[in-house]
Image 1 (cartoon, rainbow, N blue to C red):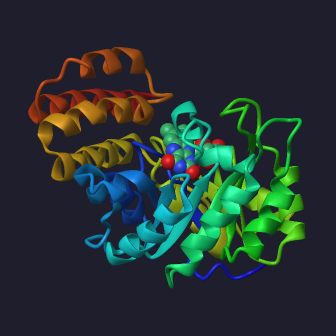
Image 2: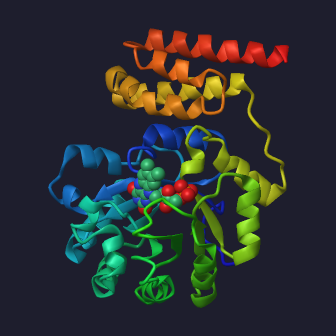
Amino acid sequence: MSDIGFDSRVFLAPMAGITDQPMRALVASFGKGIIVSEMVAVNALQWKNPKTYRIADVRDEPYPVIVQLVGGEPKLFGEAVKLIEQLGAASIDINMGCPVKKIVNNRSGSYLMKDVSLAAQIIESAVKNTKLKVSVKFRSGWDCQHINAVEFAKMCENQGASYLTVHGRTRSEFYTGQSNWDIIRQVKENVHIPVIGNGDISTPYQAAERIKQTGVDGIMIARGVLGSPWLISQTHNYLEHNIQPVKPSIAEIKKTLLQHIKNLIAYYGEDMALQISRKYVCWYCKGLRDAKRFRENYMHITDYQMAYDEINNYFDECSAQEEEK
Ligand SMILES: Cc1cc2nc3c(=O)[nH]c(=O)nc-3n(C[C@H](O)[C@H](O)[C@H](O)COP(=O)(O)O)c2cc1C
């Protein structure tokens, strides 16, 4: 196992529209884990887009944040990394795995797995212009006929990447099927820099199993965190201290959801925060009784007091019924 240079080997994955400051603060409040931002577009940084600047600015956050950049022009990366460094990033990640059409058509994200020479120039430009670590996140390949993660990883290493994160799906698979951890193992066996494995981890036990199976130096979790922000620290505690994960009570889930909404309000203001909170509510009540009715009721909330009352009523009812069992 190689040292990644962070105080954990469990990463909160970058998720556009999800791993914003409110989510990062929430995940960090549970304990250790490595926090990654949403992706930040290098061309929007160049245009000095205020919204993008705000996303990229992590100076106020009391834990290290890895900021992820996405784009397709080497020169812009050189400028972006300097700015990101000033805006408080602990380290920089380059997105070479995003499958979304708009990104790919812009010669960015997973498109770069098809244009290895452009990918190499981007990494070189980023590495040359910052003293921070530069890592790269990519997929197994473009499609099942073009699985090139091992060669791609070697190129990243040659260009000076500090570590790599591999999501074991091709671009064509988007999020379907299963992450191919055998490809991740092959990458690990073929480079000297640390490799982080990613894809389909939703419990600390799965994380431990994948590390054992593939020898990866760390684990990154994305969708498993939705509605379960404690998963990162639970996984860290299990891997490092053999602390068994405990399922949170319904009261604890309620408290976490309310805290998440408070974080959203502090960052976005009430109107926008409540709008955004609708998707989170769906995740937090997953698997609980009568969740459909609650989700429908929550869609009609108009202010924080209404949201607070709906959440309290629903979760308290669930708790009471749980106790009766
Ligand atoms: C809503 C959503 C947004 C995502 N945004 C990003 C992103 O901005 N950058 C990135 O590299 N990957 C992004 N991903 C991919 C995840 O980081 C991760 O690679 C993928 O979901 C597989 O991990 P999982 O099985 O743990 O979800 C996103 C995934 C989801 C579900």
